[in-house]
Amino acid sequence: MKLHASVPAGANTITAYGDDYVAVNGARRNRNIIVTASEVRDWNAPDFAHLTAENFSQLATLGVEIVLLGTGSRQRFPHPRLTAPLGAARIGLEVMDSKAACRTYNILVAEERRVALALLFE
Image 1 (cartoon, helix red, strand yellow):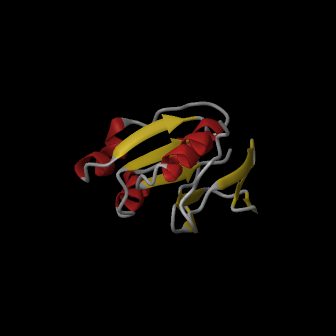
Image 2: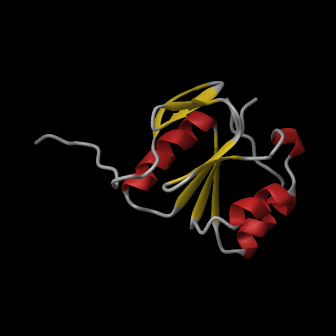
């Protein structure tokens, strides 16, 4: 039996990543970004140390059921008061290093889940 990765037609996928970049559908990005199945946009979050509740409020408006937060080369957890807008909107949050977040995003998109990937670069 052969297994083949399947992704919904037209969905954004992560095609490559490294410590200081990510490629979405082959286009390389090296700024903080938000990726969903249907859009890619810059994320105005400055860096991990300066995240605000407003950064998470922006994520709460995406119409997704889960947000994957990639925190760079290592996993770091934001304070719960910052992520409260996601909880209030009943949106799940998973925090991991950026490489793990990219891999997990691709799996969830292939399952046609409503997921957003928010990546912070150091």
